[in-house]
Image: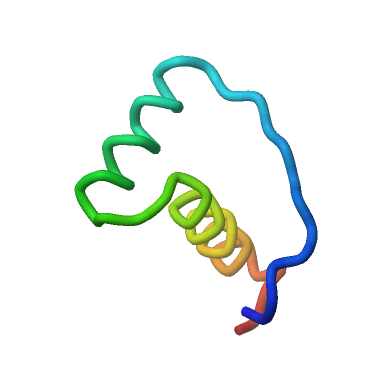
Length: 51
């Protein structure tokens, strides 16, 4: 993926928030990085994103 210059906000419940934070901590990444990766992975699985 190229430069990240667009911000997308999403509301999540506490459970998803804690899951994202836990994954981010375990992988020594930011929550935003983990969220981006999961969005991209989901789009690939649906066949919407080809990369």
